[in-house]
Image (cartoon, rainbow, N blue to C red):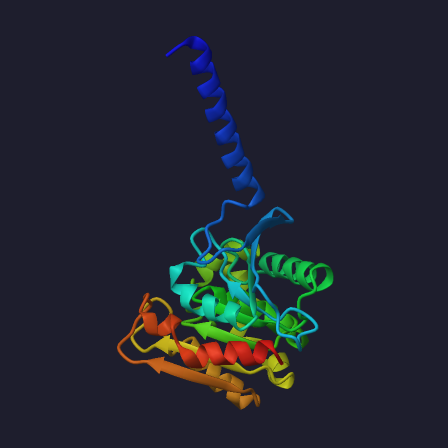
Length: 268
């Protein structure tokens, strides 16, 4: 191979590498279950998956807010639901707030996405929140401070209780507190202790959770949330997946009842 040709090929490789790194830094390299847009928002990676057409009666774009948006999430498990949401004219969006465990900093990142979509992109002011696992902490804690901005909550084995997962010793760092300080302030940060506003706003919820989940135990999370929400007049349905743990069983992700709820509440 001649020297000029080698130089040319090397230049192409450098250009390709620069393009790839630029895409990564701008968020465009994020892999989504179905095609969508990824972008940077306040130094955080966010994404939007839009339907090709909107229902004629929708003045604003209805949407489902997915959490947690982390490297590798949303994953292929979400594909079935996402495809059907898009077909129904519902967009999906999310923002990567890291392993924030529902902390004030993470909630601020959520607020930034909400403002971006509702104030600049014509999205509905009342999305449905979809929390998978620790995404439940993120979504529920933001919802607790913004109940009037939430059309509903869908939980797939959601974390609802900081004490249960990840535990105060692990979560406290995200809050900038010691474990003892977080325990003292738990009522200000733990979703199951912050349901009153959501109940008053009549925000409906639907949850699915395995009865042998050892990572996010049913009893300490979805079951406890249901008990407390009912006691405060809230509307919540809990579907118990018998014999299922914290896994990728298709029944968690391909559930018609969860899908119908997300679609109907998004259009509310």
